[in-house]
Length: 314
Image (cartoon, rainbow, N blue to C red; front, side, top):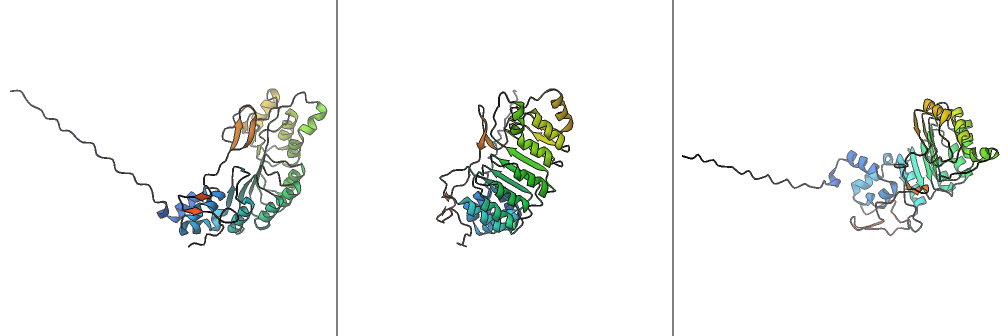
């Protein structure tokens, strides 16, 4: 008699329906940690409008120890970014340590910030052409704890650098990033003009640890001045420094003296700026991820500044 066998079919378990997390029910510390990663403009124009608990978090001075005013530099924007920056500085109650300003910086704004925030350790200005030498010097003189200064796509003389080297004993990191240019047939008599900024760095920052000079026009002579004047340098970023002939004894000295070095031809990926293969370093690549009028949050902005510094619905 033929044996018979039966096959038991096992139906696959239906997957459990995934639920989106309820962001409003997260613990306060976790919510604060998430919101802390957002830019100041996003927080002021949208995030703080979501609910009272988020507003309370966004008014906590600890949220504003770092102020990131990143933006896309849109000249048609209705936001008064300078006033907004002043408002978030007020929220920090003097605890501000790190601030990033892009496109809209002025002497008056720097004066307002530094008048109440002498503990700042990091200052970044990007495309802030309305900040003068005098305005930057005034700010530097009020920041004795400054450890890092980033001047990207800005225009200043040697004077702020000299004051920086004299007034900030804890200073460790300098970033001077600009548009790259390849110079041809540089006359030896013109090298001092080409290398003026790196000569100043070599003369005034013997304790410097980290130096970023993307797009600098320096020549080998300027690089030698940095190596001579900054013996404690740990990292050096020379990306898009197109007038350096990086080979021979100079290249050997760099690799022996400095732990981390980025070479002129290294990729600019990750530097936070738009990169054109033909033109190199162009400008900021940021964009706002929250609109001022947000139908999802049910908020339409009608304030004079384009945002609300105090949301009083609650």
